[in-house]
Image (tube, rainbow, N blue to C red):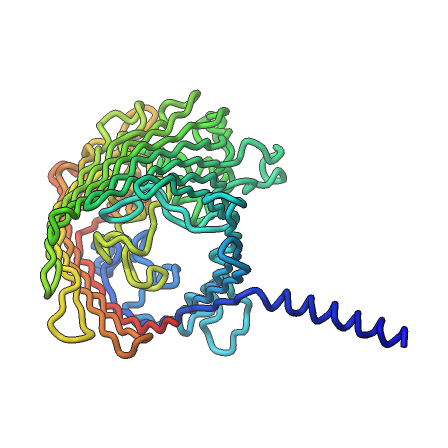
Length: 535
């Protein structure tokens, strides 16, 4: 009898544990994407020196999976899975997995883009998010810890300084119906160089960001003042030139004229004694900060007005030539009809002057890549499936050093379940034409002499976080995107894009008067068909 009681107690404890485990509510959602794309002229240049007239596929001319390609057609797919474990309204955890993007037929890529060729079975699952959500007991303070999506606020075209997945801690608190506070600490980069390569321990190599947002919400009016400050270690990017994410961060933090002249030498071989400690002999932490104000007015519905204003600066105490600071503003006005929402918008950003010794006058932009940027889906980031569709071909930080005006009609619909988005952007540069010559290598950064072996063209600097446009350069972009709802969970999307540039060549800055290669502008074209299943 005693043994039976003991057995029953053990069974009860086991069932109790099982019941407790089952109290967690598991939520699963996901998305499947299959896409087909045709495109040409993604680098916006044609090589005419060799007589081929072939389109160059350089920094901006990449296939959907991320590797350089001369193909004008590709097919691929991607799968996303979100898993959430909810213990209560006060405690939960989440994971987001991403499989692909796989380019059909291609087997030489690595990471999540591998396994597109016949018979491949490699591991290609990436973890996009992995975080814990919990409320501090007895309060309305919500804390999120782990790898999560963090972004600076915007009511116009979404995050223009920071917007990506990264490790950190964020906290939000609702003071009342009108006032909330959000803050985070993020560590996007740390310990990414080896002491074996450089003969020094891993130190002074972290990047830390601290942000504070204060969303104010009233009837018909929203306003969010915000600020972010960070520290960049002098060794943060050492040995990381071949890391695509590191290059993106460098592109947004440092002057373009310095990067093209020195970063390969510094990041790859480290043979230049003048620049032997990372960027420009800097031995101290750089300080970076932004202050912004974004707002939205809906009190005059169906009118809607929104704007962003951001000033940013990065300062190196012992390397002033690497400093960078600038202003970026934009505004949007739209009116809602039953058949669609037409709108007008514009943006402007400070650009580089002609002096390379005083740093850059373009606003630093840490990592503004976001899929939801609705300014465009081709020249700027904003495609339905950014990892697959050619978009952002001007670079991640394309809005700095430029101005533009545009008109759009979103949610345009005359047939049930079929909607359209039409955008036309006219834009130009705010950078000095003389500074472009330093970036191209036509002027030597240190002594000002022209190089006899200059080999730069527009395509060379198209990978510096932006298509570097000067005050003499202009362009136009047209997007016509469509969305058809086949079922409640299945949608078919078609993206059509066109870009043309008018690059000034009268003073020999771009292309035609280059002493080594001849280049000419070509139009960029894109047609992308995406089938999206979400559950």
